[in-house]
Image 1 (cartoon, rainbow, N blue to C red):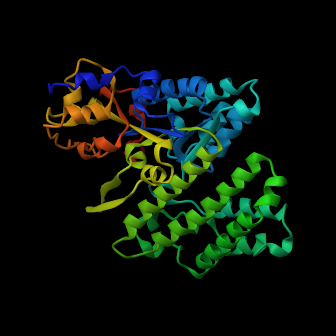
Image 2: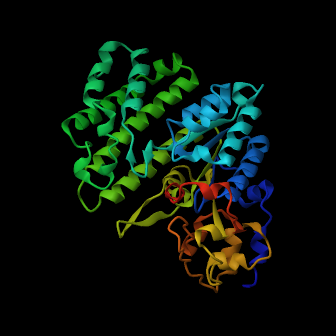
Image 3: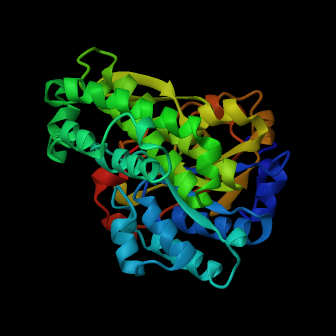
Length: 413
């Protein structure tokens, strides 16, 4: 055991988390190195409940479709729909199947019962309407934005009619063709219709900005914030589809960068409205460039966390999560010369690590990156310790409800 490591380790409790941070951040992010492990989601729920109840956080944002998330938000704030309906229709990536996500939604609804609107905790999905197999049609976002503007501004200012949008969009199936993810020629993103839609989406969002005083005065806060979400999503989806049609070698790098850019814009928007708690993959929340191999080639891009941190500085904080073992996925005890291996040697089943103290304790030691035998788990990068505010380390996971989850979904980055 490297001397000094024990001084960097604390119990995983909310008070210890806040002591790690120089100030209470506007946006507090908790990452995870893989999706769907029950123990990680349970820890998230414990911490987030405390931060809502005692630290004044009023939005919980998860790595799920931002438009589908409106279904969850309606439920937790006003009781719309049943819990079963919300878990089925309010999450992408099949995240609604996780028991801990169901418990989080149930708790949020109970917390809000009887509270004033200003004290209610809200839900937000902050991912784009994107799946590992492709992207959604921009129809929902474009139609909702157009409907919102039509009801509030002079018709002469609108760049097009709803019928024009509908005609250019065509059948949704041509946008959602999963073959386009690997075959750019199958994408409609650079067709004349798609190019025209990009111009119209830009005109609609420009109109939204130009009419801000009138629109804010004639809308509820929810209507205004959702209109802005529709605008961001429509523009982002059309950019994403355009990049899907790109046959160049930079295609995948552009796609993953666009996705994180959409995530960052959504996080900044929800944090503007209220102090926000975020849960997503470590790779989306870290301050460093993200890297992965796709199609056998290395891809690098700036994560959503890096973009947000560059914009709001110390108002953003990031805690990474690391695991020792995932036995049901073949991830055994980590080598002792990795960060996970050093933490695994501690007697704690779970702990909170002060990364600044850990970096000092490792000043004369150079941990090597851990190599995972399972592509669905991303180990810590020792080079990123200095840019992480803390680490939640869990020694061992056990196969549970999350283990029955489709591994193609869990492996999603």
